[in-house]
Amino acid sequence: MLIGMGEIIREQRRRAGVRQEDLASALGITCQAVSRWETGLSYPDLELIPAIADYFGIGIGELFGRGRERNFTAAADIGGTKIACGIADEEGNVLAEESFPTATGEGGGEVSAGRIASTIRALAEKAGVDRREIRGIGLFSAGPVDPERGTVENPYTLPGWEGFPLTRRISELTGLPARLDNDANGALLGEVLLRDLAGKRVLAVTLGTGVGAAFYDGERVWRAGRFHPELGHVIASSGGEVCYCGRRGCLESRASGKAMNARAEDAGFRRFGGLVSAAKEGDPAAEALLKEILTDLKNGLWNLVLVFKPEILILAGGITGEYFPLFRDAIGELADGREDFVPPFRILPAFQQRNTALAGASMLYKRGEK
Image 1 (cartoon, rainbow, N blue to C red):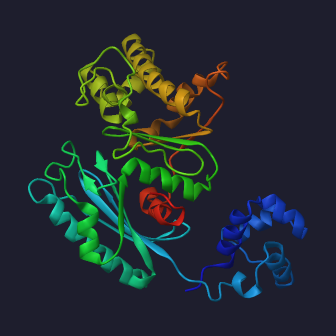
Image 2 (image 1 turned 30 degrees about the vertical axis):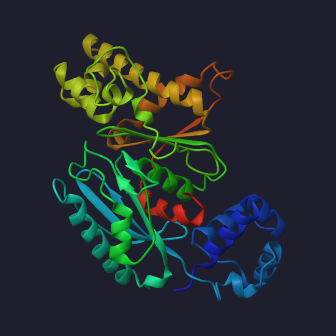
Image 3 (image 1 turned 45 degrees about the vertical axis):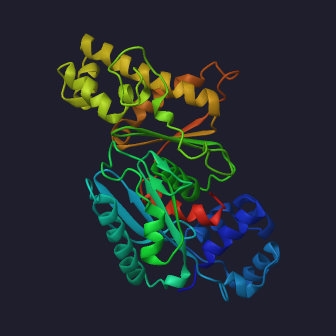
């Protein structure tokens, strides 16, 4: 299986730091033609191939993928209810994947590690990937995790896993190197790879059962020593119940997907969707509560964009899929007239076509992430 010419052209362009427009201009063709090559919709005319190879300073054989070493990464995305495993190539294409329930409680980490190892072996065989072609295994888990020690330290959604040496056990079971990171970082690395955002400042925020947040500074994910910075616990309000983090009014307890639904139900509405519908119909109580929730969301994100000053903010999580325009419009107000504090930034929905964490595992090895 040779890597497609379009993928090789895209990789060479990235390495050279040139745009599609630059390559098109040099070859005397349209930018759309280059885009179609890179997405596999068409191929360059034969008379253009020497010029393309010359432009990048490579041999024609390399352009066809001859003599190119194949590199793949295995991955496991570990959540409180399920684990997704996959085999991905350097471009983040997931060649094979499979999910199964997460084992929790006493011995849950060991049981799950064994299932991860056997699943990865089966997926590699299914994808036609030799073990020697797999550079390593990227492990992404709901935090807290300790990437330096390779241990899961999460009693909240992974009871029974506290202190479990995940990377050591996976390496022992597979004979492959393994690296562990927070699942928010994994999803962000996948977004950067799949959207070609290297060099951009990217903040990703997932509104799910909790709030997962991660920041990419243009070269690597922002980390703080042994533990992932729990950005979802910045203070967004003076109200609400005390969160398990020990503080009242943090972003996760006020504006996670779970919290939005709970606040709506406590006020007599059918989850967050019912609240939004009632607000659209002019219900004063619904309008007031929706404004309060969106204000808490904006307060928490203001803290993050003020500190990190992203060029791109990615909103992920189940609740954002349906209500992305609502959240985008509310959050977009943060930069209005505040360029001295918060430069303008783009707000994008999460990448939907692939599992971003499984794709992002290759970034742990390809781009020197540690």
